[in-house]
Image (cartoon, rainbow, N blue to C red; front, side, top):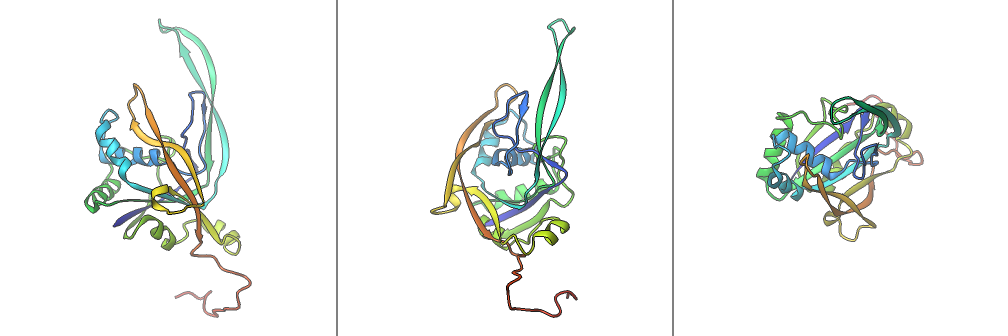
Length: 240
């Protein structure tokens, strides 16, 4: 099985699954529906191509939290006009973002050909992909690569992608990293919850989402260094 690994990082991200017009919330880690929207954009799918988009629900999805961001709130003023085009009123919309967060997303499918097609689309996207909002474009290095492994195992082996300053501060403290994944990927997962994250339609006329089970677990941080360890490498600071 082939798995694509992606890094989502940047000043702002937003991953809402339960927002209303005037209050746009964000979850604390990327949603599968948002990633499916990103893949659909890269593949050149239009919003009304429901069958093609629903097919993407079949991908296996997992996300590792490498750097927890800060939750911030912004507000924007929207203008409402009357039917004749004249001004009626202004109102404030509250929009929430994650600031300076870093995530590693793993996507896979039993059909390797489909994964290879998605990988090429990510490299040469048809439409501009973004991290939940158009104001949050993907970083230039968002593609980590494609590996021959299952999603959870891929995340266990992938290098810690946090920022340099974050690693320096937490490399001796952050022994485990949180992972959120499709419940079908983890047998006897410790925590399972419903998330409104399955895409039925992205149509402007009526966007529709269904529920899926998501499981939370913790995996060892591949870069963690225990200060209490008796092992010592005198050449570690020198490098290779």
